[in-house]
Image (cartoon, rainbow, N blue to C red; front, side):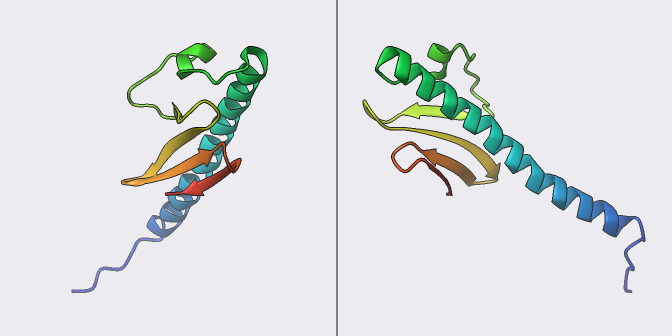
Length: 99
């Protein structure tokens, strides 16, 4: 027996796929705001924040965006995009990469 997709199912799936992609863009925007905050903190204090709490952001174990100080000059900011996948900002290259 062959099941035909309904006429409303296909447009709904297309919208969900598009919204999923838009979600990553808004997360990158949020991440870029965090990058700006880290860079401003670094400019004012001449060091990186130890955690996002130093930026006045309440840390949450479930994110959605995370910060990690790697050493005295490098840090990463990341968020999950799907199960087992992340988008990561590397301060050393000043760019976002898929992981």
